[in-house]
Image (tube, rainbow over all chains, first blue to last red; front, side, top):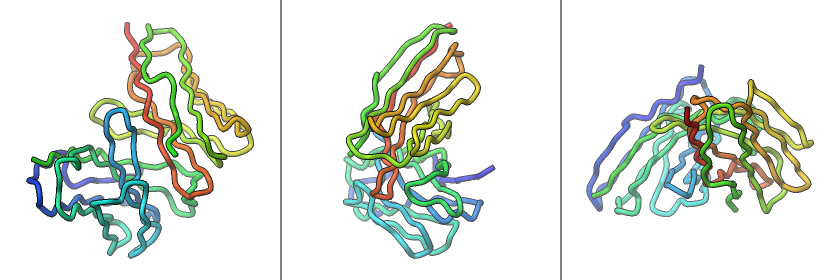
Length: 117
Length: 109
């Protein structure tokens, strides 16, 4: 089974702080994704990566950046946290050989519920 | 552009059937369906590929009409374990999977 591990289930930070959310997968998947989930809006793609050191903007990248120095780890960075970034953040991966418009399932982590005060 | 799911919410009794629809304004290559229980990660149900296929998994099945850019998820003889939020994800030529806003399904005894 694919295991996608997000470093924290709950996180509370202050406005203006730099925040790091970590995601680690154990299946050697090439593609990794960061989503935020808000009630009534579903899952919205922030950034994704299809290889080490490669990254692409998703639909809502403003205020975020990402880092992928190793294949198994994909980090989401809030450069200067704001209250409107309070949300559930989900990391996902897809398997080797998957095209981004994907005939492979996405495997999700349990999510990080982030509160910005 | 985000696909539109309908209905937004549905309440069923055990044993009843439900249909969840997913519509896109873009031409689609594939449609994914996921279920998320409260406090848990979304879990993959099935993928339907271009070609207008249907798939089934136990008493949950789905269809994909690429001409209409629509997919439907069918839940037959619902069980308590079917409760959760269902998301469709649509893949077009942009290279990204875009999720709908979700449909909350509650199955009561």
